[in-house]
Amino acid sequence: MFESLKPVGLDPILSLMIAFREDPRTTKVDLGVGVYMDDRGRTPVMNAVKRAETKLMALENTKSYQGIGGDAEYNKHMLALLLGASHSVIGSGRTTSIQAPGGSGALRVGAEVITRARPNAKLWVGVPTWPNHVPLLGSAGFEIKEYPYYDMETRQINADLMMETLRSVPAGDVVLLHGCCHNPTGADLTNAQWDEITEIALERGFLPFIDTAYQGLGDGLEEDAYGMRVMAEKLPELVIASSCSKNFGLYRERTGSITFVTKNADDAKLVLGQAMSVARQMYSMPPAHGALLVSLILGDEELRSEWTTELEEVRLRILSMRTLLADSIQDNALGMDFSHIKRQKGMFSFLGVKPEHLVRLREEFGIYIVSSTRINLAGINSSNIKYLSDSIRTVLNG
Ligand code: LMR
Image (cartoon, rainbow, N blue to C red; front, side, top):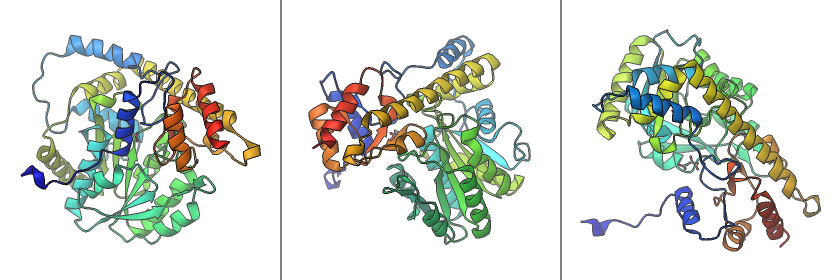
């Protein structure tokens, strides 16, 4: 029967990751997939994670099934990490959160629950967005609509057009927002813009669905949560998909969670039942290891403080690479301005060069960049910055 299948290409980000691994050149530079790398080009296991693993080895006395919603302690800690332990909505009975297989699993559970509640809801995504958002969420049955987000010319958010479009979103539709460290542009909403979108959501009656995969990598753990927290405070309903891949470095452990804020405690119970039913139908139960580590870290003062220190080092290293790259390739003579890289947040920015430049960078210099020109700033380090900036300048100089 399988001969009837049509060939399908691999996801562009993941196929770039494979091409990079297969490139034998020792000078190659990986600015593709969104994975943190330190100054030695490694993606290390955080010390807090290592210590939690040692603790877990001693504590863990069963590998029996955990349950559809995952680890209850993890769910409590994640809610507090996202919304802040003293947030008014926590303890009101209006929130429910379950563990999910990574941020992608969380997004999908959220989408399935929403489409069960409102089968005709349309999902509004910003342009551009993470390329997998559309297939991942569209497969849950959403019709996809778009709102303008980033202006390639000015290299910043096109706030006027974005707000104007959001003002036309019908009640009951869903608007996807990036919590912080926008992927792929690095252009984040200001607190005032979050306030404005919250007001529009209230007026129009649409449901914000926030994808937050980089809390702590932008302005800081608390600062990066502003949008989620203000929406949870002011709106009757909200959905948040979160990931521990980047801020705990737990990529392959597939550690995420899906959180719902509902109008009242009865709705929260309904949503929890539906989320568990969706999970059971798709993957039955989430993997345990990563969530148990996060739970141990967030539940222990010393481990938590070690983790926040390490996360801050990650954030500051990426920030310093932003400045280093932008200053190294700035070329006023060529009329090219790269100062947006310094202003933006998190792992990514668009380099903003032409497609033929990307091809040359990859073929001649072994520099791997996603076709949108999105670069992962964490792929830059003190050993490759000169090679990288010289290569970019060579290519731009024609
Ligand atoms: C990315 O955007 O590069 C990461 O989130 C990895 C992925 O799955 O695409």
